[in-house]
Image (cartoon, rainbow, N blue to C red; front, top):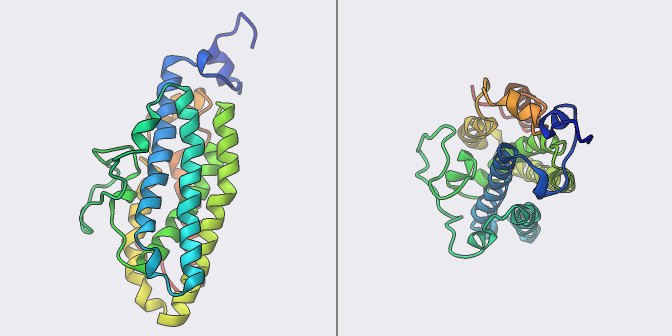
Length: 253
């Protein structure tokens, strides 16, 4: 970056930053929000899935579920470490945080966040049994893969590298969920699982945020976003619907 060029212009032209010391205040705020949303969602997701491990049908299923919990926690730690470099209080994540807190099953909060943390709204809903957890993990796993592809190009290089390392891990989680879904369909039939698909589809869809977000252009200028929410959501809908179709299920709506 030349001495004559502002950081804002540098970012708008595709530049990257590598150190907390030279990031503008607004950039820092948006970057921390992005990281907190990811970390909190991973930890809340891991906590919810941990409670369901022993409901898995067999040792292999339980091992796969335990691995997902471990790897989600590890992914959260990777990003949390970067947050710590920005002065975030990382200790609050380690002790006495209500990651298992959930709302009632029939709560309708749209895109609202928890009062406790920055988790995506979908992670405020409880899991009800193994089949429910598999369907949720399948749909949300596909959503995370789409979102991580976007986040893998953020202009803060250490975070982009962390997301690129995390993406194949999260993609594998979605693949494990697809395998689990096919096993459930074989054992129970697709009709028995349609209720779960209907429940989780709109809640996962809401994780993509507002389709006409006024913040998008500002985030794109800072190199923190590239693709509008509606395009990301459409990609997820197409991919997730194809997987459900293979299992004999339909997307909600």
